[in-house]
Each structure stands twice: as structure tokens, then as C-alpha cells.
View (cartoon, rainbow, N blue to C red):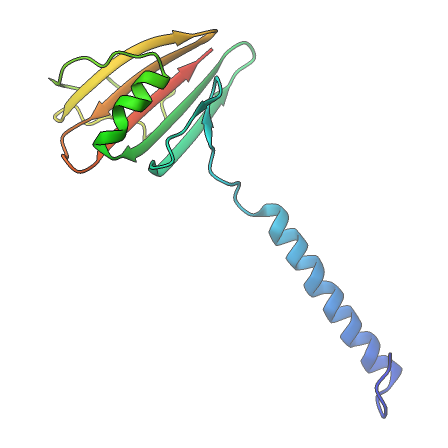
Length: 146
């Protein structure tokens, strides 16, 4: 609708500006970051208390490896290990060596105290490594391969 005293040219310009703004908003919404994952492969829930979560999926032709790193309150670790059917070992110095294809942020610090375990559920192999050097918050490194 053209306002009183306004030319059709001005109204069309205003309408184009509104359309451009709406299109930009739609493009921005489509390109925004995905929500954080809620499950590990194999439909195992990521603990709700996990913070600073990072995920990397390496999907090859015949195999897939998913990498996760997150912080977790120490009292939540037993539930995660139980969900993964994984019996954590004793505290040990030295983390696993970095492997070819690991994301740069997936690098447990070897000089820190760790606990680790491996398990298999259906066709998924899980490797869990936990940096237990901070008593208030553990850093969890989890890889799942199929």
C-alpha cells in the first residue's frame, strides 16, 4: 500500500528492501550451526551434564569413526561407563598415543593421570579415555568406530 503523498517508486524501493532483509534472514537461518549432538553412535545418550562438547565424524566408504571430547563432573563418569558397557581401568599415567586421522583437539595429554577402557556394543567399538587430573571436572575422550 502506498502511503499518502508517497510515490509508487519509493514504496517499491521499500518493499524490495524488506524482501532483501527477509531473504538474508532465511539464508542466515539455513547456514546457522547445527544443534549439539545428543547421542553417541549406537543410540547412547550423551550425558546432559557434559560441557564443552566437540564432535568430529570421519565417514569413509566402508567405515565410520566418531570422535568426541567433553568435560564431565566426576560423579557422572560411572553412568557413562555403564552405558558404554565399559569397565574403567585404574588410574594410570600416560594417555594413548595420537593416531593418524585424529582431529587436533582429540589429543589426551600424556603427562596427566588417565583411566581408560574399550568395549563393543553391536557393531560399534568404543574407546574411552578419561583425563582425571582435575578433581572437579574430568575431560572425556571417546571414539566410536564401525
